[in-house]
Structures are given as C-alpha cells and as structure tokens.
Length: 294
Image (cartoon, rainbow, N blue to C red; front, side, top):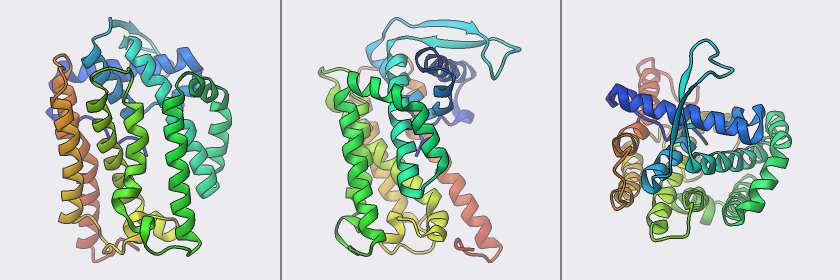
C-alpha cells in the first residue's frame, strides 16, 4: 500500500527534483539513525511526501548536508534533516509494522512475519509516543480485517464488504491521523489531505492487485462490488479524481510557500503516474486479445 504518492519527475525542475531527493535520502538516513539498518527497508515515497508537506507548513530549521550512504558509497548525496523528517520516519515505521502484520495475517506471508518481528520493538516505542496515531492505525486495520474475513467466509455479500466509500475510508481514517503532527489550527486541513490521500492509495492498491487477488481468492473491493473485468474505467477515474480534488483543496488552504511546487507536482500530477501505467498495461493486454484474468 506504499509508493503511490510520488512526483512526476518529467514535470519537475532539476533543482526541485534535487530537493525532493534530499528529503527522500534524508528520511532514509533518519530511519537508520533512529531504528538501525533494518528500518531503511521500509523507506517509501508516501512518508517522504509527509515530510515535505510538514516542512513546508511548519518551516522547522532544516539542515542539508552532503553524505555518503551504504547503497551509494561512491558519491555524496544531499540529505535533509529536521524534526518533520524525524516525525515522518516514526510514521514510516508505524505503517510498515502494521502493513507487515497485515501481510502475515491476511496472506500468511513469511516476509510479513519476519519484518514485523524486526520492527516490533521500534513500533512499541513509537506507539507509546504517539498513541493517537497508533490507535487509529490499529483500529482501522482491524475493521478492514473484519470486512475481508466476512467476505471470505461468505457471511456478507453486501453492506460494508461492497461499500467502496467505507472500505477505502478505513485507510483514509488512519492516514488522516498520521498527517496531523501538532494540535493546532492546521490540523483539520492536514486531516483532510491524509484522509483523501488514504482513500486514493487504498483504491490504487486494489486496482493494481485485482488480478492477483482474483487468482488467490483474496478480498478486493472492485471484485466484491462486481466491477467489470477491467475497472480502470471512466467511473473509477472520476472517483479517484474527486478524492484528489478534496486533498488538493485542503492543501491550498495551508500557508505553504517553500516546497509548494513539489507538493503540487505530487498532488496534481505525480499520483496519476501509476494509474496511467496501469491503463497502459491494460491496453497492451487488450491489443493482444487477452483479458486481465489471464
């Protein structure tokens, strides 16, 4: 459920992309500093966006340094460091632990069990420091499990199992809380950004996994509601566009000046790159005369 909140590189200026990479590399470095090498495995673009958004809004003192890293030891790379990136690192581990737990409980993935074991002590530390955020993640993932279990067990063919708004909203609910760093006048708009991005991310993940979920008999909201074999249609795009409109509207109310071009690139363009890639993939299959289920 990670990797959808990303920049459109082709539409960024070189200076802006360099800044974006500084936050990405800085978040990676912060994960290592706080939680060790294992935590760097869960680095993702979604929490990089969170770090940039909160930095642009709260303007914490930010240090940019040229450093080498384990993956790129030859050349130094610019890395950003500030308190907002530290918070994003905590939320990155919080999400990764719950995602790993979900992978184990839902699909019995050994990798999920292994990763959750590696992150358990770090997660407990973060949960104690941020009880509101951890409670939101735990409660809403639990509700999602209940919905998925009801569908698998054949106990429900309607209601919440086929309610796209409800199911996607569970991810929206916990991302909304993760986007709220401080208890202040900006929290409502930050919640709205997180809520609608969460719904968007959940549906994008469902679209990307629909073939795999059909083969394995896993729950997928699009198969549950009886969508056509290819749900990448105009109706789905309108739903997703509506979510991004609400997220973008909330962002535009915030007094963000620095890094605003990068944030707008992500909200207005970057998030659609994966959707376009999925459409192209579906188009290639259609041209070959195949179906999405083959």
